[in-house]
Image (tube, rainbow, N blue to C red; front, side, top):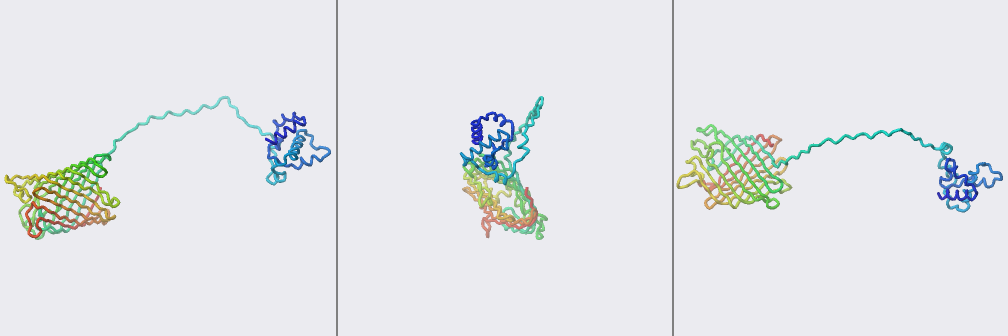
Amino acid sequence: MRKLALFIAAVSSMGLSAAEPQLKNTGLYYRLFAPLTFYHNVASSQFNIISNDSDEVSQAIDQALMHVYLKRPELVKVTESEQEEAGSLRQDIIETPVMQEVEMVEQAAPMPETPEAAPVEVVIEKPNFWKYKGDANLQFMQNYVSDNWYKGGESNQAAVGSVTLEANYDNKSKWKWDNKLEMKLGFQTSPSDTVHKFKTNEDLIRYTGKVGLQAANRWYYTLQMLAYTQFYHGLKSNNTKVFSDFMSPFNLSVGLGMDYKVQALSNKLTGTINMSPLAVNYRYVDRADLAASFGVKTPDHSHSLTDFGSQITASLTWQVNDVLSWKTRIYGFSSYHRSEVEWENTFTLRVSKYISANLFLFPRFDDANNRDENLGYWQFKEYSSLGFSYNF
């Protein structure tokens, strides 16, 4: 633009104002708009006596450029030789004016109509706070039972089936409600028993329910209910006496206290620990002849006994690795008159997805039963098994 201004000033000083319309209507004067270049013909034309260019405007451009070469040489960027090395100019652009092709239409095409958005039905579903799970086992085993085991039984080879069902509610805010139903039933045959063809070696129906209100973090104010009995009557070899039966005994325990949710060892150890300083234990024995053996020793020979005291319950699972796990349950109740402690341990070695080996250890203390000469009030049960298992 500075060069154009100098050129216009030079042309004006020469009285060639008529060249201005031509500058607007032709593309021949590219030298005015290209980077300021030193053209050889501009300098050589100044030394010619007779001008070879009849175009007055071209002469004016040459004179203007020469004026710039002499007065402002620092504005010259390149020479004509350097420009030719970089590339030649397109002649079709220089000689032929560039015409803009414009297509005229009578009426613009209408904008496409956008269909209205269809109404969307929003369905809000109430979150489901219930979780269900369970497992089933059918095991074949050998077991050991002490002579004073409170439900009877005999050491032998046997089979046992078990089902555990859980339905737990947790609204992720304050309330939780846990429900667990355990059922076990097993039979054994004893070659030495001439009285009974089959006897039970494992017999349990147990329900555990807990309603908790969160106190802080993993602590809950909890009301716990524990109820258990058995399916079938318990027998001993070569003995016609029934040592236990359905609802003989039936135990119902209700405790008020605190519940702690266990999450340790990178969540490999999980479970709950319940401590109830206020607890009531109700024991009912339907068969009157068995009442005394289960601690129901009342003057009026009633079938039930109610004790007040405190209790502790712990249910933990430790997943040692991918194939080995340990489940343990501890239950303890103490009143002013008696104490009862149970510690169940199940070690499971998973052979495959549906086959596992179990080791079950169950020490038990109950001073309401008759005292044994060797073990005192302690009782012990053990069995190892191999069989089928399924989790759902």
